[in-house]
Length: 215
Ligand code: DC
Image (cartoon, rainbow, N blue to C red):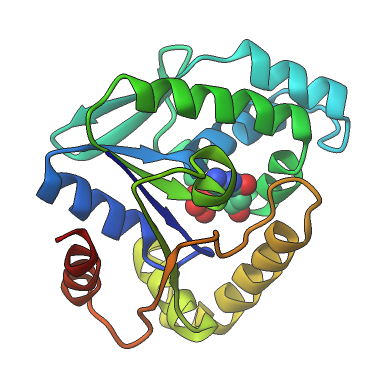
C-alpha cells in the first residue's frame, strides 16, 4: 500500500507521515531529504547551482540511504551521516533551485519508486509524490496550514526564537512560490487527494482525520 502526503513547508507532513508509518507499521520515505542531500553536496562542491549538467552529475553520483535509529530516521550520503547537515539554513535557501532541475528529479523519482517497491506499506512525503511519483497511490493527502502557523512550527523545530517567526514565514512563502511555479513537477494538489488544512489541528487530530479515510 502506498500513501502519499504532499504539501508546502511546515504543513506538518513529516511529523504526520512518521506517525502514520509507525501506526501502520510501514516505511516512511522523506523525499525532501533526498533533494536536500543533492543540494548539500552541490553546495560543498562549490558548483554553480544553476548549472544543470553539474548538478545532475552530482545527483547521479551520490548514494542516498535511510536508516532507522533510536532517535528517528537518519540520512546517509555515501555512508556519511548528513541528517543534521541537510537541515542547515544554506540548504533551505538553495534546495528549490537544485530540485527544479529535471535531471535531478528524474534520478530521485526513480530511486523513490525503487525504494517503495521493496516494502509492503510505504508512507511517502513530499511535493509531487501523489501527482508524479505515485499517481496511482492507494491514498493521497495534501496537508496545508496558514503561513504564520507554518512559521511557528518551523521556529519550534529548528530551535529559533519566536520573534523570528515573521522572517521564517516569509522565507517559507518564498520557497513555496518557487516550488509551486517551477516547470517540472510543481507543488500541486494531486488529483484525487484529500485536502486537510491543519492550522487549527494537533498532530493527533490530523492523524485521526487521515485514519478515517483509510478505514
Ligand atoms: O520537505 P522539505 O522542506 O524537506 O523539502 C525540501 C525541498 O525539496 C522543497 O522546498 C522542494 C524540494 N522537494 C521537491 O521538489 N519534491 C519533493 N517531492 C520533495 C521536496
